[in-house]
Length: 194
Image 1 (cartoon, rainbow, N blue to C red):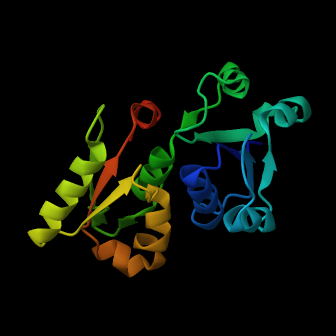
Image 2 (cartoon, rainbow, N blue to C red; image 1 turned 90 degrees about the horizontal axis):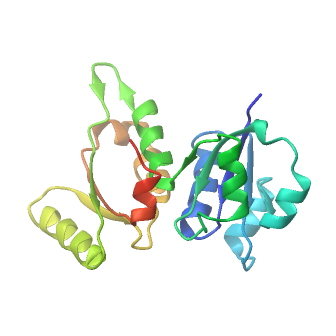
Image 3 (cartoon, rainbow, N blue to C red; image 1 turned 90 degrees about the vertical axis):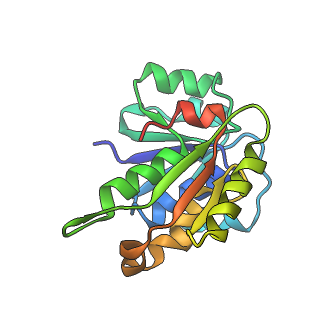
């Protein structure tokens, strides 16, 4: 039975994915891979919630049953050409982004009688100016009384915002028509399909 979610990288996005899996998706087992981390309060909290954290080499050497992995959530800064990613691909395990994780959750879980999730998502990508454009669109929409929030690679992971704002209250989620403006790297887009 597949029951493990593997998070590659414990940057802002990876930590947010781990907390989201535990608290919103009620995932039973989360394993995180991080080769260069400093233990901070969030890492300690993840460990307290039974997230097992390994470096890539230890995980590859000691984890034998890749068939138990349901999905892999990869952080934008994690090396897509690393040995662990090659093994995951060889085992045909789906790799998604933190953005995809949040979008799938919303699509699957925020359906109400005669009503579907109505928030819109605008994705911003490109070589230069992503943050500026994300903030500009957020500002223009809010100035015109259209609720909007800039998220993604501008220091607020999508799943963190969902957990701490939209999903705190199902009634709030039901009535929310907020627009999410997501700054996305090309790497995130590659692993985002929804």
